[in-house]
Image (cartoon, rainbow, N blue to C red):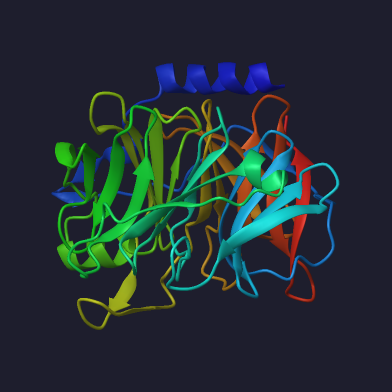
Length: 343
């Protein structure tokens, strides 16, 4: 099934036309994604209530699921992905050495060695931990203030790459920068939305994921649905921009907007695999968390849509065995772990 999906994605990529980036009369046109394969899916629950708050990211490492979320005074939680049992937790909340205050924008995990990188935008610092060490009960933390900007919050996100460089996104300035040894080596200033105020508002609420091999990045909007993919080898190169649903909101100021009756929910979360891009997708104006899983190739072409009856909060995928893991919200509005065979 996995081979079939990849072959289908490759065929779609070869045969596709540039319908997702058309303009007419100077106005960008949007096309609701049409998926060649649509199926129903159901989750297998693998945990009780995790008692987590504000889960900002989830990734897989070996036999573990690593979740960045608040529980009492800890931010990092490691679970057995087969049983749902919690194996370890760490990373304290606070302003002291090795502690962080906020976890808005996720973390990076090196699948080769278990090194885990968390950036605290409020403190302008990053911390490095190791999953294997945490499982063994050794919670060492290495802290750096290399992204501090004289006490001024400057970065939204900081993601490390395998070649020791970093992808960063600045607040209210350039969009993405690639930094190595403190020097900018590449940048990507372009937004896919011409209105700069709307662009900044939408991309302050986007979803971002780097592939496990660190070679590519996928970005999606939460309001409306614009999907971008990037090649991070030797710079920041846009692979594709797919305009599916136009973002329509009521802009109150440069920093504030409200959804309207015309606002369509787009991508709730995103996971960039080495082979495909996996998202949760709304596609309606109804409030609540997405119940659909939308899969795209790296050229932005729709591959498969899976409709579920669950409210999906976060996802990650084991592409080797075709298992999607999810944080879903149950009928009691609690976060629980679940899995689904998707191919």
